[in-house]
Length: 227
Image 1 (cartoon, one colour):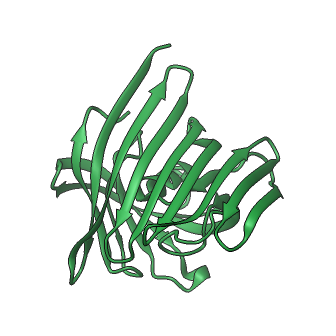
Image 2 (tube, rainbow, N blue to C red; image 1 turned 180 degrees about the horizontal axis):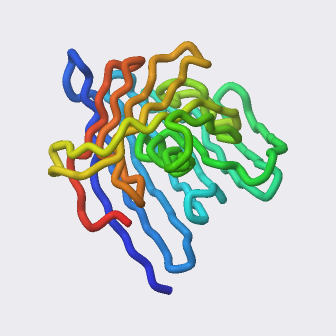
């Protein structure tokens, strides 16, 4: 089977404290339209480590595995699957034991927040260019409602507005890139907006800024050609 892959690193930069974490990732795409994200995330200040494998058909979720370690101790592990009208989670949570969830969905889940910041950018695939400047996106599932993804992992739901700001050429440590700039409006949850810059087509993260965590997430290294 023909496949294409790229990899890289994303640095987490706090407004005041500097580098507070990082994320290594590999993305593989196949000729049949499938896409697999593998990510290892670590946050120095909160001592969170997360390992994720997330598979999609295009950008539509199919399955994911997430393992969370906090301060050297296992917090939780979960396996997620997504079908035509249903999402399921089988998890083991520290202090909570075995958890089984089934959630009905109005059609296939539109997107899934697995909590690598790389995956935050994949929600941009739901935006319909040529439509309204600000669009509500729904039927998005996630593995944690915590801003840093430190709880669970368990199934939850999201919805928010995506606004297209425009095309921007920006420079990050990995280089200079032509991007689409979006704003995710999260006021429904009492959170500041999330500013997102992605490569058109692949929705590869170039930069995110989120005032809730006072952190910029910047592409620090890129190997290969995202597509």
